[in-house]
Amino acid sequence: MNKPKSICVFGDSISWGAWDTEKGGWINRLWFYGINRKSNNYVEIYNCSISGGTTDTILKNFENEAKNRNADALIFQTSGNDAAYENSPGNYLVPPEKFKNNIKEIIRLAKKITNNILFVNIGNCDESKTMPVPWIDIYYTNESTQKYSKVIEEVCNENSVAFLNIKPLDNQDFEDGLHPNTIGHEKIFNQVKDFLAEKQWI
Image 1: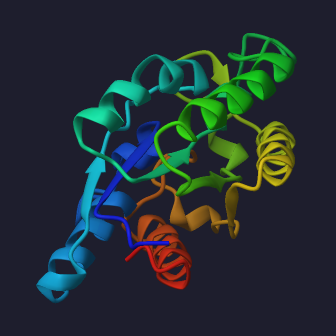
Image 2: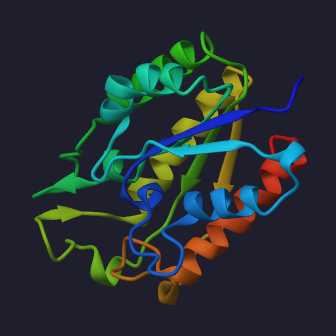
């Protein structure tokens, strides 16, 4: 398999880069890592993430975004917003069955573009600050996020798609309980970087 020349990443506000005030998030750190390597190892990395994004958002946007950038590798970081619930437990932003179908559809459509597909899961938060988050009546729990993470892993395994489950961050690695701070993004970046290097994507 040839090394990718263009990687597109799709996700939510965490992959968008909030609140890494040093380098703009774990994806931007991948970009910095790439431009510091020799030119023959250079890979274009495009951050196509949308704050507040869910699997519904990804399905609306990723095909055109990837094709416009000639992407030959796709990374999806999702599940956090899908697994959040509004007002009362069980009122998920994206219900579990729809979420599972969305993951299946993302994979089906992604395989029409490339076989280089990776799902990245960030599976925890600081619940003392996310029940609910201060800015809206939406609740993020580790139990729900991990439940959705298992769905992604199962669907990826069924479809021979790579899955990376990020090691849980410490509470002090979060800026507001939900979004990683500079240290948190650095931890995510290192795990993704090592995984991509092992796969020879970068």
